[in-house]
Image 1 (spheres, rainbow, N blue to C red):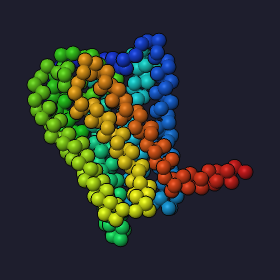
Image 2 (cartoon, rainbow, N blue to C red):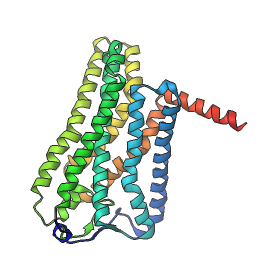
Image 3 (cartoon, helix red, strand yellow):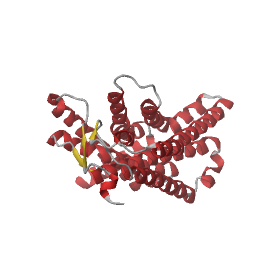
Image 4 (cartoon, helix red, strand yellow):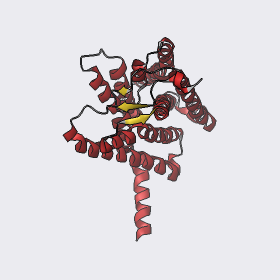
Length: 312
C-alpha cells in the first residue's frame, strides 16, 4: 500500500498540556524532576534486587520487571513532552507517532499483566504457603513474564497495524502524546474495526487482569478472615500492602480515564488521568516498595554500607 493512501498528513502536532505559556518553565522543571525520580528510583530497585541474594525470590523477580517496565513506560511519552515544552516545537513525524502509540500500548498492557502476576504470587504466598516454592518455581515465573511480553506485544502490534491503515483528515492532537483513542477521532476512515479491537483487546489486557487481581485478593481476604488474628492480618498487610497500593494507583487512574462519565472539560480530565498513570504512578512505585518493605530497606542499607566502606 502506498503512503499517500495511508494518510493525508506527514506529521502531527501535539497541543501538549493545558497550561499557560508563562507556566511552561515551572511545569517543565516539575515533570523533569518527576521523570528523573522515576528513572533513578526504578533503576535503584533493579540494582538492589540484582545485588542482594535475599531478594532473588519470585516477588522481587516480578518487581524488577515491573520497575523496568515503569521506566520504559514513562520514557515513551515524558521526554517528548519535555522537549516540546522547552523548544515550543509541537510536531511529531507520522512514523514517530505510530511508534509512540505502539510502545505506549505495549508497556501499558505489560504493566497490567505484571501486576496480575504479582497478585497471583501474593495469593499463593498467603493461601498456599507450604506449596509456595513448588507452585512459584523459576520456570513458572519465567513463563508468566514471557507470556506477559508476548501478549502485550501482540495486542500493541494489532492496534498499530489497524491504526496504520487509516487516513487522517486532521493533524492536531489535543494531547501530550499520540493516544490511540484521540488518533481515531482524527481519522476520516471507518474506525469500526479499530473500536471493536479496542473493546475486545481492552477486556483481555485490562479488565481480565483486573478481575484476576480482585479474585486473588478476595481469596486472600477470605483466608485471613477465616481464622482472624492480629498476627495474620499484620502478615497479610506486610505481604500485600505495597502491591495493593500499586494496584489502586494504576487501575484507579485507568478507571477514572475510561469508565467514569465525561464532562464538559473531558479532554483536560483525560490528560490529567493520563499523567497519573504515565508520570505519577511509575514515580511512586519505588517509594511504595522501598518505604513499606523491610527487605528493600535492608538491601539499601547493605548497599550503602558497602559504598561507604569502599569510599573510606
